[in-house]
Length: 239
Image (spheres, rainbow, N blue to C red):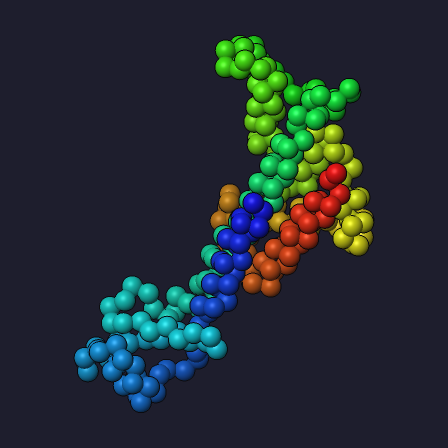
């Protein structure tokens, strides 16, 4: 599931890099005429043709196109990168939730259930709902805990630690750092950076000061690489 979700971010980064217009000069007359013949533009319309180009692609904008080459400049493609950050954080969040949910039955059946699990609030309405809907009450208990996990799960490392402590998997970050071979606290720092950037994009449009914060494919690629490495380490240490 994580790989399927993180693939969305990879495609957004790839699109941003592939579509970036690196052409600096106007088209030469000979090239304009050649492209005009290919797209069958009239002599009058050929003057309105525009292109975006880099080492990988050449995009032709026909006359009266709503998109122009200027829309493919690096700065204009940054919304794709911002959405990639959101997709990376969502991939981590969904992984954490699904992984933790798998441990719920064992945590509930433990001789000494985790304290944070026992601290989850249960209302009378919750109790009556379990009585009405479930012949096996345990499944009602699991559903209540799964709902709680969905609410708490996040790409934020503090929230991740909280979610896994609910199911008796505490002290994960020291193990993750050790598995990855990074200095203590580095995995938490990396995820905290991702979570804060995701929140700023979602809540303020990534504004910093009087304008948008800078962002590039290398930065987003680092978020993605760190997220994948952390999830792979979690898979190994969560036993």
